[in-house]
Amino acid sequence: MNRRSFLRQSGAFAGLGLAGLAGCGRRGSAPAAGGVQALPFYDAVGPIVPIRAHVDRIFRTTVCLRPFRAAGPRTDVEHVGNKVVVHNFGHGGSGWSLSWGAADIAVKKAREAATGSRDVAVIGCGALGLTAAITAQRTGLRVTIFAKERPPYVRSSRATGVWSPDSRIALTSAAAPEFGAQWEAMARTSFAMYQSYLGLPGTPIEWTDAYRLSDTAPSEGNGAERREASPGPAKQPEDSATHDFAHYEPRIADITPDLQDLPPGTHPFPTKYASRTSRMTFNIADYSRQLMNDFLIAGGVIETREFQSPQDVASVPQRVIISCPGYGGRKLWSDESIVPVRGQIAWLIPQEDVHYSLVYKDLNVVARRDGIVVQPIPGGDDYGWNDANEEPNRQEAEAGVLLLKELFDRMAAMRQ
Image 1 (cartoon, rainbow, N blue to C red):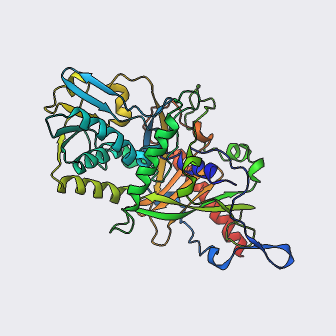
Image 2: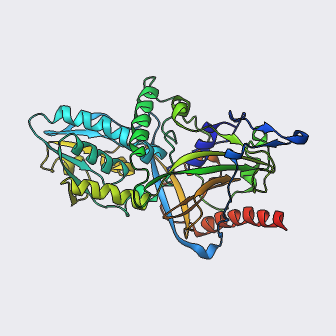
Image 3: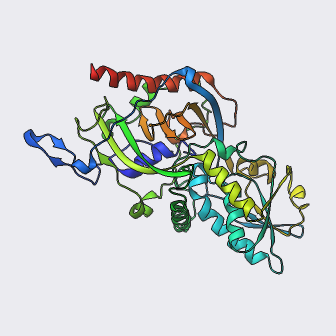
């Protein structure tokens, strides 16, 4: 199994996108007596605390619309009247993951335009807006955020919360040849900044183990398992054909752990195949609060305002504006290149000793400090394509939790 496929499958449905796995992990395990493989003692799988997967432990269900653009994020500069607007939206399922790198690009353009003034406006208070605002402050600019909503009400607060920098970021056929290098720069800048949040109170960012579980060999898992696990009547639009999503993760293979096969008997899971990696997890409730505090402590100002048109944008007093409206950019800028990709999360009550994630059949599970994310992902990257419905589907939420319960019921049966 390879790391890239695992990260796509568990991360792209997050803010997320991943299909099947292929190949073998690069980290081998030593053969033990009788030809049975065993892991070195330092790679041993620790105790896996089961998740209490009961539908009555769902404390909320949220829906997020990921703003996908086939050509990749919008980063151009536009003049609206006498204003200079630097666009910074359309990051698909990679908004949190690429936010600091995207902010670096946007702020450099804003500073070039802000000759003679230190005042800059930022539209939006989600992942892209907050990081753009803080990055601008760190270069000496005075920043005012204008937004209709603030965390926890922004769409970014409903994201899966995993490092997934190439999740639905572009289409291979539509991205410019130079976009891969731009993506890599954004990913590396963001990754480096996230390391500075490790170990802080509230654990806004942490590394956790992630498991890929399957009853079929990776080369055999071509959707049969997904079809069997489909959670029911969630909407699938007619134009949900497979898309050639671009995947650039191999460009940053040097800073992310490999995927490691776990031989039978070395782990407690009931599936025939299991693999493990480590990845960054965003505890978005704490992380958003940290970003808000950082911005306000540095003298930032937030004003509640809703923008309906470019003319409304032109009414702000600052001459330079960084536009980070997320999916709202489709309406605000009449940008039909933005395609909504719907994703739903059922939130289970967090458990003290559960800090891992897993992909099992049609399910992505991320145990965060602020709740256990249970996310059905039938159909892979294309699930939710062009579906702008933000109403939660309770039946889909319960089906996902019941599928997770099936996994732990199988583990319980193994112990008997």
